Image 1 (cartoon, rainbow, N blue to C red):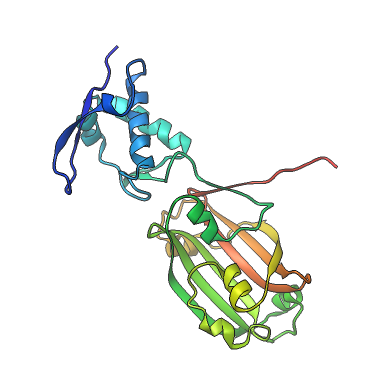
Image 2 (cartoon, rainbow, N blue to C red):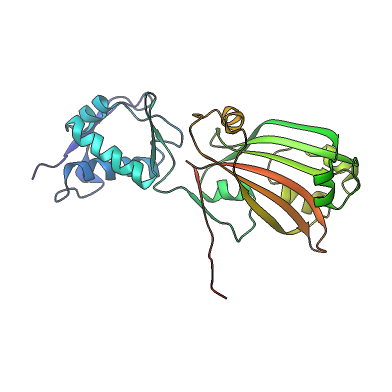
Length: 266
């Protein structure tokens, strides 16, 4: 059976070179497309191909691995099914991370900062905005505050390795936070800020999964294709005394995040 023995690497930092495929992995008894898939996965895991980066074209990959374009196409198809890459028709193929999505258990309350770090990516924040508003009747009921009470709103886009992956809106009563919230730089975990800077320890959240009413607005904020599905979690966060502290609207890219929940028969 034909096997891949070497491939060509175009690296601006190290120069062009041929690499012996037998040095890093044994490929002898695998179909060609599996060999290509495994090598691309290895490159992703080693961050030779980084999250959000566009893969070389099919002709370039075929030349790189010394195989046909149909072999490369089949390898990419399998990688796409496994969640390692995202194929955007007309744009190219992009790295989605390692072999799987960011998987999260809905029954466990974790910050988006924690989820990004657990995946091995570097979290960041862009387009953050903080402003004052007043509570409408629905928010007042949810947070158990007076209607038209002053509130603080925070909107921001979270990034992973500088790529936009998450958009959130936080709304909270101004009174218990005072001027402390105004000192927050709006980066990092809001849960940690509340705990360590405001002495507010969030114990749990009641979450509702909802359809996104205007998905094009959210996909525009995230800079992604408008056909990409978005998951919205509408959450009320409670402290250790069961007092509602803030409401969040969390918008997740479903091409990056995957959620699961365990359901039991009582």
